[in-house]
Image 1 (cartoon, helix red, strand yellow):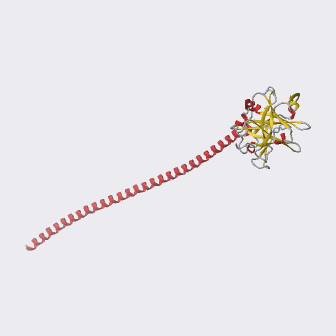
Image 2 (image 1 turned 120 degrees about the vertical axis):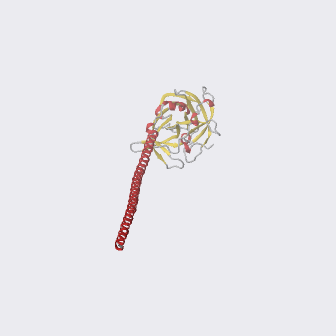
Image 3 (image 1 turned 30 degrees about the horizontal axis):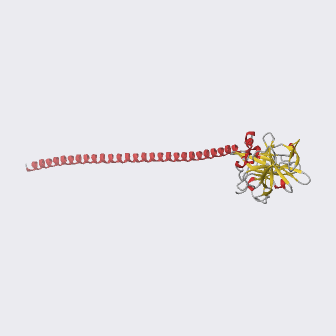
Length: 330
């Protein structure tokens, strides 16, 4: 009897133990499952975060690549823009140079018309003959009414007069020249003469003649080769068979005012001061002391005095004394 109770007790104890063990195992399984699930969830989260981070890195890489490409395009665009600007600048310079090209500039009759009668004839006598040259009317501070000419036109003369004509080459005034002359640069062939009394019955007061050349700007320091020029004077080839009687001189042949045109063909730097000009415009005896005008994009300017010819084997070139070496400072 005791033995049966003991077996039953043991069996109950075992049954309870089995139940407890089963419950324990079941609880441990649940805990394990939960732990596994948590681990799996955590791993999944980590993997997802890693994926997100990788995608973020990939996106950043793509963005950086796009930024680098955009920067490269920007640099190229800037380079192309600079190149284009340089081309535009060069083209603009070419256009400006073409606009300034002396070959595209001409001197018209309307350009010359206001100044033609500023050029006058200078007649001088020697014991053996009467010579003719040209001059221009000027007004200076110390010489209100003056004629500028070449010194060789009056050199060695006993008496000189200035003959003033209108645009039709009709004589409208003849004046004596005072004995004194002025030169402001001893290295130039220049004389500035003071106009004296009228010796012609039809002369009008000396103040009424054309002194407009003095208002024309002097040409810049060095005008380009190819610049158009005109020479105004009383050349020997324009001498007529008609004559004019002049008190103190006698009878002289009438010479008409004439204009020749050409270009600046070179420079003469053999003298002191600013360079003189070789010009292709014709210069004849009698042109000496007249006026040479040039023209650039700013209009007409006074180039200087046609002075002499340089004769070559097959060609002649006129030499014009630069006006910048001739104008007095006061």
